[in-house]
Every structure is written in C-alpha cells, then in structure tokens.
Image 1 (tube, helix red, strand yellow):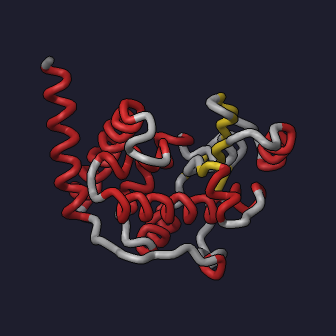
Image 2 (cartoon, one colour):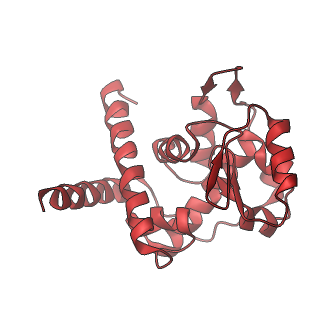
Image 3 (tube, one colour):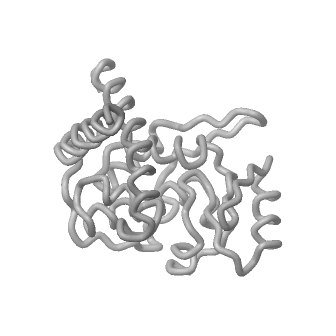
Amino acid sequence: MSRFIIALYVILCGGILFRAMIPADEGREFSPAERHEVQQRMKVADRERIPVRPLFSQVAEEFSLQPEILNAIADYESGYNPWALNIEGRSVYPDSREEALAIIERNRGKSYDLGLMQVNSYWIRKFELSPAEALEPEENLRLGAWILRYCLDSYGYNWRAIGAYHTGSPNNLPGRARAYAVKVMRKYNVLMEKSARSGK
C-alpha cells in the first residue's frame, strides 16, 4: 500500500510541476517544411550514444516543451540509441543505421517503433515519411516532440498524455499507459532537479 501511495505522490507532484513548466500550444500542425531546420546533429560513436543538448533544447523550444521531458522519453524509450527498434513488441538494437533499415525492410507490413523516440510506424505512414527519413536522429526527435505535443493538447497536462505517447490513447491499455507515465515522470523529475541545481 505504501508503494502505491508513494507512486501516486510522485505522479501528482510530477504532474503539477509538469503543468507549471510546459505552456499550452494549441493548434500545432506538423509541416514537412520544418524538417532539417536543426543544425545540431546527434553525435554517435561506435559504442557510445550521446544526447546533444542543443538539439534537444532547440526541438523542445520549437514545440513549447521542456528539454527534460524529451530527454526523459528518449532515455526510457531507446537509451539514446538512435538505431533502436521495436518490432511488434520485440526490442532490437542494431549496430548501424543500415542494419536498422534492413531489419525494417525484412519486417515490412508489421508494426514497429524506431529511433531515439521510438516513433511508431503509424505516424511515419501518416506523415508520408520513409523509414530512412524517420530514423534520422533529428527528424525522429522532432516527430517524437510533435506526437508528445499532440498528446498534451489532446489529453491535458497529466500522466494520461504521457501514457498516450506510448499507447496511442490513455484509454488503450490504461494500466500499461500509467506504468509508462510513472517511469518517464521519474526520469523527468530527476532531470528537472539536476537542471535546477545547475541553474539552467
């Protein structure tokens, strides 16, 4: 029972902070013209994935979000691995962009999530993007930011919106959506505390 109360307290506190820090932005629409505006790039070494802070900050500003929430989702979803895939519930971690695209091609017709923000193939088709375009780190981050912004505008500033990022709707697999939101919000709260300590 005490774990439930602690989890509920974390959600409530995180939700209040989340709402206070993230301004509403009604009517945002995704535009292909927004692509390739970000000049910063994800720098990926052979065995090391490093989030480039200016990229997260710039995309967060474009979508009226806090960079900490984008970082929390990228950390939880892919561990900042830009080539990470999930093919119908099975996580795959290719070593390169080329390998990731080959895996997607072999699984054509199946549902998949890809990249830093684990953008689902539904959105990729909706925006008429190719998997190669959506896998590019800066494009993937921007897509993820748009989806999160859409969820926030649709469901409000609470765990339901964060859960909807993962399940498509807070009413779709509500237990899973809530559990996802709790984990992301924990990461978000830690990042916000670090930002506050560093004076950012």
